[in-house]
Image (cartoon, rainbow, N blue to C red; front, side, top):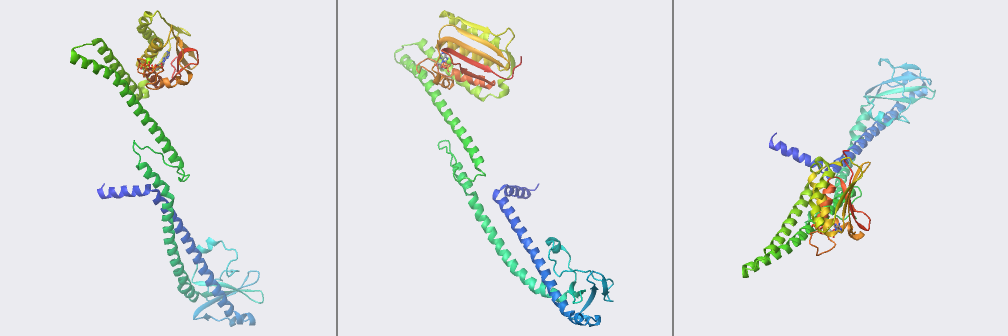
Amino acid sequence: MHTSDQKLLASSRTLSRSLAVRILASLIAMLLMVSSILCLYMLDISKHIRRSLAHIQATSIAHNYNISGNIHDLPLKYEGQRLDYTLYSADGDVLYFSEHIEKPRRLRKYVIHPNPSRWMSVFSPSGITTNVPVYLDNGNILMVALNDKYGRTLTDNSLTQSLYNTSLVILLVLLLFGISLIILLLKWTLKPVSNAINIIEGITPDSPTYIPTETIPKEILPLVNATNDAMRRLIEAYQSERRFVANAAHALRTPLTVLNLHLHRLEQNGQNNLDKMKQEMTRVRTLVDQLLELANLECSQPEESRQDDVNLLRIAREAIAVHLPLFETQGRLIELTTSDKQPFTYTINPHAVMLAFNNLIENAFYHGKGNLKVIFNRHADLITIGFSDEGESPARDIQEQLFERFKKVEKNSSGSGLGLAIVRQAVNNAGGYIYFLESKQTHIEIDLVKPLVH
Ligand SMILES: Nc1ncnc2c1ncn2[C@@H]1O[C@H](COP(=O)(O)OP(=O)(O)OP(=O)(O)O)[C@@H](O)[C@H]1O
Ligand SMILES: [Mg+2]
């Protein structure tokens, strides 16, 4: 397609998408329709005037005949135009018709029909002759057919024309007035929308605002509400990301400061504290790993979260086997119990499961007390996996917060507070739920709802 054609098409598309243009077009169409109806009415009026005039003329023409009853008293011409007559009895029988017409004219009892079907009368053709009835004293009806040239000249050329002219001028003025009114109304109607646009244009990450809804028309209120809702979610997400970055920077700063201090000492007086430095390096690495892990989980697509049919029990055994020696150093045990002997199979990413189990077992080791029980249960459409140790459960009101990033009970504990956030993200990705059970001792439960394989 030619470039100019493309431009034309693009601009016509833009125009047709414009709300103002659409409203304007429909209102103009309405205005034109009303004007057309008015014109048709005017045509009708002109026809009525013509027939009324013809009736007056016909009554005067038939005057002599009405008195004498002699058909020869009827003139053959009127104003130089030939006339013809058809005489009907009161019952509608043809009594006479002029010799120079082939057949009698139709009997039309009314000059103007008292109950006209308006539209039919407007569209019914009007011939050159006008055939009007004259009621005679003897009860007969004389149809007088006049060549309508005179009436037509009078009505069409003068009366109708002047009516048209005046009406057309009025119509044009009305049309112009209507269009200006429409434009003003449109501006007034769309003002709240343009105000909203101004507000949206002013939104930056540093000055997030909502669109005020007080002046918004109720038709577009749902759109504005939805936009405000989306804005609220974005603001929350943005603020949470900022908190996350601030927390991550804060968490990284402590081990890095310690590392820096040791490097300084090493440089200044050769005092080396390699063990301490290695410890801080591990902290940094763990934190970076956790942050990456969390970022990966948050960005992962649903198909990545549900990869294989995984035997959850097998993964639990592997995780327990890795951590059992650690527990044993403190004389503690990890016990695995299941509701039945069938494999607990679930379509899930095995890496995410391992990650979740490791974190929960580590939490029980570092924050809990006594033995740890890992309890698998199968229900109709649900697998539940409980991690229950003998330590005191965190206070009810902060339990949910502990699943947020960097949230801990003990501010100075060695962990970074990312473990439970990672676990919740992994479980949520797999379509499951994780929460603290209401109990005196710590009991965290994972519920995997769908899709169950067995
Ligand atoms: N089994 C538990 N018993 C008691 N408190 C727990 C238990 N598990 C978690 N918590 C509390 O929840 C907090 C958050 O746990 P989370 O795993 O998110 O962080 P963390 O263990 O402190 O650090 P890390 O990022 O190394 O895992 C812990 O600091 C602890 O206060
Ligand atoms: Mg932890």
